[in-house]
Image: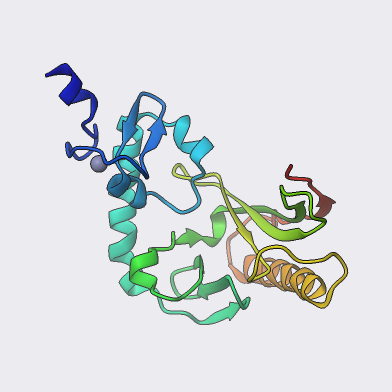
Length: 202
Ligand SMILES: [Zn+2]
């Protein structure tokens, strides 16, 4: 009996499969529950969150999915990862826009947007290739930051055309965020500060 219980997801009560499970702080959750979490939670983040907190997180994600119906894009920037803004609601989403309902991108209020920066991360294989990432700190109880690869295909050469395009894209994200923060009435001073550094990921 105990062995059986050990294999049960503490969130949904279903039996866990062999792959795709995630280690939370005080239990292991199943693949289906893990898929419901925000894409902005890393494996490391999940490992620091309790099962009870993850249940609240999933409830928040379900609310997010419902509110997504109201999202009406007024402006956007970005090619591979698109930053969309809904001026009426003051919401930002980052998404690949293949299937918005499936992706369920977190609706981020403009007021929750913090510092943003880009980083150039070397690929682990040591083949001299890099990826350009863009990170936005977010003041949310459910995730700490948005962090994504800007170049569509992983592994590009420094100073190549793709690399320069990715850098330009990060500047466009910055300008866009800066602009909508400033336009949003009643907001505090824009928190965005531009930083640039090389971060090696090996
Ligand atoms: Zn589950």
